[in-house]
Length: 439
Image (tube, rainbow, N blue to C red):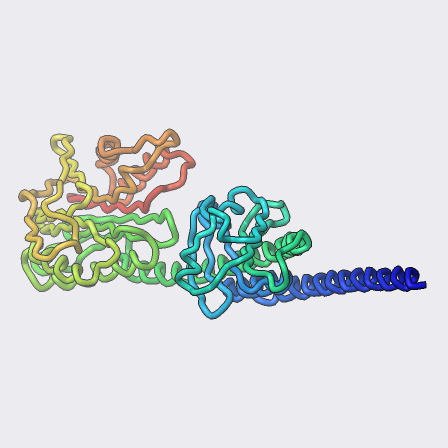
């Protein structure tokens, strides 16, 4: 009789254990469903990482942990979420430590005593005062089973981590990876929207600042300009400075380092200063000195401007010029067919004050002479095999077109560039200005 009672008691105990196991599994599945829903309630990445960590920790009954994501180049793990009171940004190379090993191999690691594992970094515990005992580290995989991050959970509340805990994290990882992907897509969309706004603003600035007419004729001098973007906003600059006192006409071309809104705003500042200074002094070099000294305090992040400026007497053709580290303009002489370079007479603008710019050698434009100003988008235009167009080909294109009107000269030089590059995309902005003395 006692034997029968004992058997019945053991059977009931086994049934109770089975029921408890089923209840725990049901609760785990419910948490997984709830987590899947919760992970799709936000597109904020920081909030999402906190929700993923909460779902992972509660699902395996961990005391605390970290959710790492792989960097875009897949060389580092990073996280901005830690459970507990601290919220830190962490970065570690793939392959380093336990989490790094999981990221490298894609294999789950379950450790019952962290201090016996050589990969464990005790310094975290020493700094925080926390005592890590068990570790469960598992990959976060997307639908293609590619590792995109790592769960690192510490100290299970009841006993060591189990195979069931591993299975739970594996099921959770697909939902986590999808939610993270959506958050990144949302962030990219917001950044694209912000970029588009910046581009529209930069383009508006540039449209207002470039000459309303792409050409002008004053006395015996005719000028024309061209500006094309390789991106949505340019750091290239050109301007016609007119009218100036004493039958003079000024031209300028510049190239701000970089592209986009910041470059466009720097270009706008330089244009405004130069326009003011050439009207307040009768020497071009003095205007360039003032321009440089005003730009230096405002330049940041390695920004600078190369610039060529010239003032020509529209009756006599006498040319005063200054080259602040810009590409050497090409002067084609109609009488001799010779093409000469107007090389730099000083350093680029915006780096150091008190530059002391020098004027170039005195020149005069004779009838039919053509001056071509350009940015490096012309000489550095690449053929499909990578070869640059170069100064020699640019000079030849200018000489071939020099007998035409300035706008036609620009068109012919541009056609030569297109023929050289074919359907290859521009690597840089392209800006050119032609100055010609006519009958």
